[in-house]
Image 1 (tube, rainbow, N blue to C red):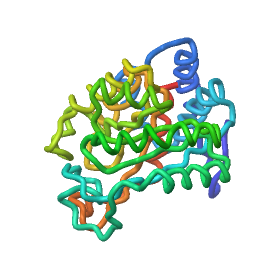
Image 2: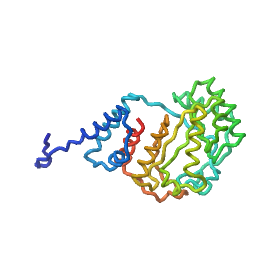
Image 3: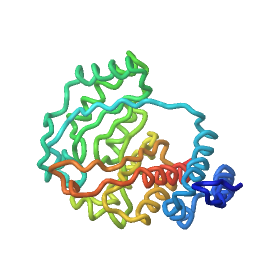
Image 4: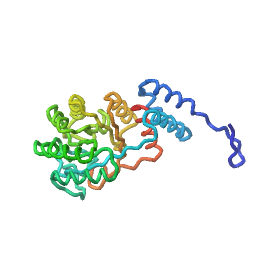
Length: 281
């Protein structure tokens, strides 16, 4: 096909075959390779719509055009002892944020009512903490059965590092899924956190899986990582077979170590989303 632009005859590029062939292979069970992932992130602007079309085919095959709403309740804010560079709730951050201990059961229950009123399918209880205390787990165990009985919501928790006993406790009280993001690659992880390790996070996900809970794990893009780090994260999450993969893009927050980090281009963000869909169909 040829187009005329400003009286110049140009040849319209044809890249759709390459990416549609990759989508075909993924639909047939192919696991994305490192080189394929890097090719997605480094594809030219003239290929972008074809890359997105390939990713959309995967999404439509497995999920149609459905959108599922999750409602998050920040049940404990600030005063976290960890030093995660991106987080305004970290002990090292000076961000101006609300700081409060864990909400009581009635406040968490009221949040679930709002989630149901807004037609959310999942209600996620989040606390800023290295690992939940026994008291915090007791509160979750108290309120989750009430929420499920009243509203029928799926329950997710994001409560920090977990051992096998803590994960089993969450499963026993009715929690359906646990969120614990890997955030970035193993190589880059020491650049964003020193108070716990990448392996600590992987062990938490194993405990969650062993307890019979669904795994929700993703990452934050734009923290200074390389393309290789992004691909490594996407492939690691594919190997873990996480049921839900949140892809977050860093918004640098005043008072955090990553405040000077530049924003990403929208095109890069779209390529990242295509990569994660093709790596985690």
